[in-house]
Amino acid sequence: MEKERIILIGCGEHARMVMDNIDQMKNIEVFGLVIADKADTGKKIMGYEVVCCDDDVDLLLKENPDISGYFLGVGDMRIRQRLAAKYDDKLKAVNIIHPAAIVSRFVTIGRGNLLEAYTKIANGVIIGSHCIVNSFTSVNHDQIIGNNVLLAGNVSMAGKSIGDNTLIADGASIGFKKSVGRCCIVGDGAVVTKDIPDYSIVYGNPARKVRENVWEG
Ligand SMILES: CC(C)(COP(=O)(O)OP(=O)(O)OC[C@H]1O[C@@H](n2cnc3c(N)ncnc32)[C@H](O)[C@@H]1OP(=O)(O)O)[C@@H](O)C(=O)NCCC(=O)NCCS
View 1 (cartoon, rainbow, N blue to C red):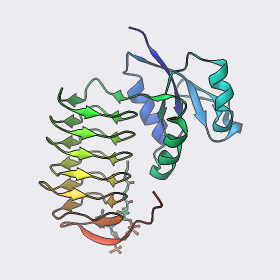
View 2 (view 1 turned 90 degrees about the vertical axis):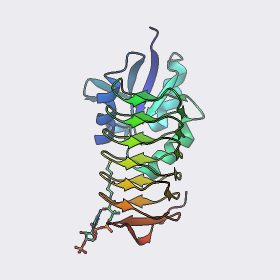
View 3 (view 1 turned 45 degrees about the vertical axis):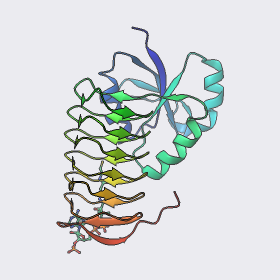
């Protein structure tokens, strides 16, 4: 099988989690890591070498035209949004779908998504681009997930839709046919029983809004 050669953007804790997943992918080969700080160039993290910093990436791509793709290894959602805008113009964002993810054949999925082991994505689901779905999260049928959405581990999704740039934290539960707007944070273990408006931070059971999520996105 021909491998897609990619760069991984980032080298922190989220990047290391992404590397665990990439290690299981037969069709992807990491050329190296691209980081924010030039001082880290040359370092090795989990066997992957930091090959350059963000500012020098155009030169790297010019010298290595066989690099065709990239993946975001940064967890912060605001930074992810900015980096995706930058790198989508240069390279193809690849999907990393762990071989142990359970994904229906009838799912529509964009680019640059990470689906970890033991996620379950049921039929009719539409997933945008640059989303993260951590292990043991279940997305039931016919839901719409926007762009740059983070579904952390053990999330139970029976809802209708999740807007762009929204984080659903570990162990939360989105009730039947409920929607969560864009740029929201649903806290750990929250139980969403009503639709959540854009830019809300909610937690608790039943989930209540505690404040606005200030976001320019
Ligand atoms: C939801 C969230 C934004 C709340 O943050 P916060 O308002 O700063 O909360 P604090 O830690 O200051 O706690 C304030 C109060 O809320 C309570 N609280 C915070 N999160 C809670 C939750 N998920 N459920 C119930 N209560 C919660 C705290 O116990 C505290 O109560 P107290 O005032 O009685 O002591 C934060 O917990 C969060 O970001 N969670 C997401 C974590 C994440 O990124 N997960 C993804 C990992 S991949």
